[in-house]
Image 1 (tube, rainbow over the protein chains, first blue to last red):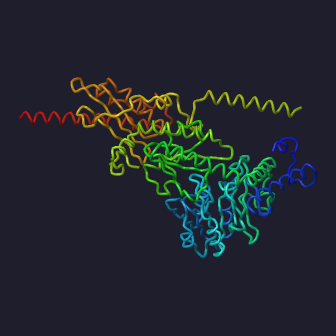
Image 2 (image 1 turned 90 degrees about the vertical axis):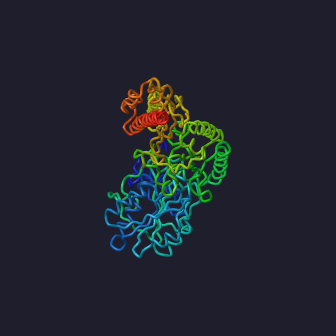
Length: 382
Length: 169
C-alpha cells in the first residue's frame, strides 16, 4: 500500500499519462484478487468505501431500479444495522419489507423465505455469517430458491469473505457485500459483487463521473484497493490453515471456560457457525461488568449497558435468549494472528472475574438458592 | 529524503498520541470513559455480602430488573436501640457504574441514622463517581435501593413491636 500513498500518486482514472496507467493497473490487479476469492469475474466487482456502503447500494439500489414493478423485499431480523436501516428507509418510501424471524439457533428457515416471497419481491437479503453470533446461514439453499423464483439474492458477506469458502456461481448469489478490514485489509474500502449474467441492475447511490461502470462514481483510492486485494490473496492462500488454527483455538477457549465455570451458554447454532466468532452468556452476571475485567482483551458484549440506547442486542433478542441472559453475553473473536497464550490469558481472566462477579451477584445468589428468577416481581419492569 | 522526514514525523506523532491515551481515563469506549473512582469500586468493592433477610433488624432493598440489566440488593442492619445503621452489604448484577454506585452507597450509609441515610441523593453518588449522563440511572437505582432497605427494616421493626404489644395484651 505504501507506494500508493507516496510515490505512485497517479489517479487511476487518468487515462492519458503513465502515472494514471500505473495506478489503474494496480487497482485492476486488486480487483481480480477480490473477484478470485469469491469465484467472480473481475468486471463484477465494484469498489466501495466498505460493506456498509455496499449494503446500502444493494438494498436501496435494486429496490429503486425495479420500483415500477417490484415493491417487496425479504430479509431477516438478525441482519447488520446497515441492512435493517436501509430497509427501513425503503419502507418510508412505500416498499413492503418482510423481516423474517430466526430460530433459537439463529438460522433462518428456507421454507419461511419461500413462503414470504411474492410475485413483486425484488430482493432477498440474508447475511452469510452473523457478526454477533457467528452463525452461517444456508446460502446454497437460499440461492437455489431465489434463482428458481427469479428473485435477486443478496448476501452481506463482510464476516464470511476469506473465512468460509464462497463461490457466487455455485451458491447462486447475485449481490454480495464485502469488507476489507474484516480480513486484515485497511479500513475504508470494501466492494459490492454485482452479477452480470443474468444481469443485476441497480440505481447507484453516488452519481458523478461514471466510475465503476457508472454504479459508484468517485475516484478510487489505489492504496486502499491494493490493500484489499492483497488481503484477499493472502486469505485465499491461508483459508485452510486459518480454519484449522482458529478451530483449535475456539475449542481451547470453550473448553477452558466450560471446564472451570458452570452455566455457560453458547448463543447461536453450534453446528452451522464460523469458529472465529464465539458468543457466550455467563448466567448471573452482566456483560459490561465482565468487559471491564477483560479490558486487555478485545471482546464485546450484547449487553444493554454497552449500547448507547440501553437496549440489549437485537440479535440475541431475535434468538429468543432469556432476558436474564441477554445482558450477560460476551463475543470472543479469534483470528489468524491469535495465539494460544492469548486464548489462555483470556480464559484465565474470564474465569477469575466471572467467579468474582458471581459472588457479587444477587441473581446468582438466587439461582444457587433455587429461586426461579422469572417468578419474581421486579421493582422496575422494562 | 522527504519520505524519511515524513516517516519520522509520523512516528513521533503516534508516540505522542500513545502517551496521551495512557494519561486519559481508561475506558470501555472512548466516549464513555470510566473514572478512576468507578474502577476503584469495581476492582475493590466494599461490603460485598449477604445478611439474613429474616432477621428483624435487617432491611433488604431489592431494586431493578434483569431485563434492564441492573439489579441491586442492598441490606442494612439497624441497631434497634439507636436507630443507626451498623452494617451494610450489597450485591449487584449490573455494569461497572452500577456496582460502584451500590458499593459507594453501602460505604456512605454505615453509621448513619435512617433519616440521614434516606436523604442521600443520587446526584451525590453520580458526582462522586463522575457518572456520565448515560449512567445516571445507576445512581438512581442505588438511591432507590437504600430507601427500599430502610422501608423494609422499618416495617419489620414496627411489625415486631406490634407483635410484642399484642402478646403483652
